[in-house]
Length: 463
Image (cartoon, rainbow, N blue to C red; front, side, top):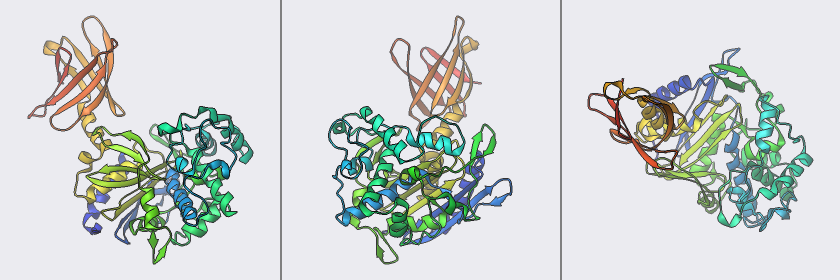
């Protein structure tokens, strides 16, 4: 496998991340880039604490949210290799929470791949809202008994598991954590520390609030409230550990990436076989599709997609006041992790893809879907008028769509435009009318930089 001299890309990476932090109003960010079996670049941007202006560093502890799911998957596969359980093992053999679920028994593999047919029961959402101080949803989730009752009450929501329909289910990973505890007789956090963190020399990585607060170099969590940043709390609870509770830093995540890029081994220690690693990266279900038609799939604790013609393994994490992303090209031997102490408008997975794009010699604004949308849709916003101003339109961006308000001589109405093709000089969109017609809408960019909107019978010119 090839490696890259990341030093050659350092200036462009730092320029890109500095601008991304500024545009997204991120207080502090840490980044790690790994090429081959070595750490090639770690750095941090901004402040870990705004009130003291203490800078973020590669040692700053951040919550990495759902990137933790891959840690849980590693632990499960370690136990599979030790013949303590099987991927086809029914969860009911270890924990009673899903005994009343309709249909066939839910298996370990189905929970690892979000393909059990169980939609989200909202347990993690309710806990994060409470523990960050965002809001109280009034759901009893203060101990294992509450959690058991909450899950038991939701099992009738299950869809047909034979359909392998994708439902992102955090509770499934909480249950996998309980499987690990049932099989090993140890707490989830103890097992992970002894069998993953310590062998990988992830010395600062932890789960508990006490451990987190024992380090001076740790993130202060924030909410974004319009243009203001408000101090908040990092959500910590044992029920969150397995689906999203890992607390780590760039220096530790370097070793975690090296473990994957080196086929399951680290410093001569084989933590997981290459066969088990391959199982993690085997698609089990389809999560979504990008505007270019690329599918985002899910394996065991990892999301999978094609990016820049390469196989990409990735996961994002969001715990209300902390966000993170880990992504790597296993065949190109390159990986990136990014963590922030806020939940910004663009998830740090966008920044992760941007860094990988730069390492592959590409412009992130042309290769990363979120940045492409930002660039293209932003350029189309504004006021438009037809010949002699008989019809006028206002175009505004709304996330990944455009909202167009049309003013004619008799009425005013609005439509939503969904992008189909943003390549070239003609940008193609689609809308559905109130009569059920699928309507093609186009924006055309002229050689002089002018933009025309073609909507039904009208040609409108950007003002």
